[in-house]
Amino acid sequence: MIDLARHEGERVRLKDIARRQEINAKYCEKIVPKLQVAGLAKSIRGARGGYLLGRPAKEITIGEIVRCVDAPYRASEDVQDQPFEAAFGQALVAKWRVLDAVTLGEVAGRQREA
Image (tube, rainbow, N blue to C red; front, side, top):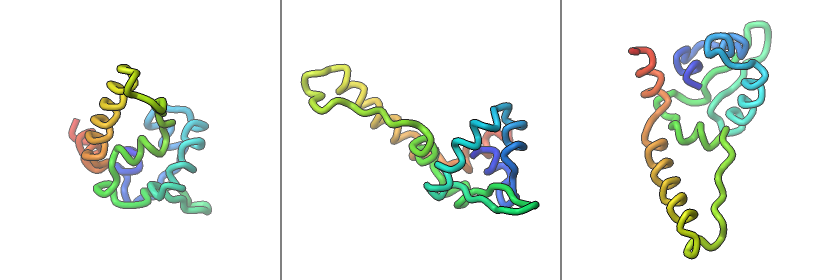
């Protein structure tokens, strides 16, 4: 998603993303459909096809992206008698608060500057 944000408005091929980010292209192929269903990415078919952001980078939060591609942790039903579960639940609330406050545009911009 950061790669798409860095090339916002341009069609980007998955093999190019995989090469630049040094990740497996098959891994990209597994993630992109999830991003498309969530409206975070869209595909353009054809010889000059590729992928684009589904919305402007400044409108996509990191929390949205993580929720889309990461399997959620499920706490057990009764957390009152389970101090670890209760503490972990509080940590998750804090995690989402932070991730939902940061946009893809901010992260992509920071990485450009570095």
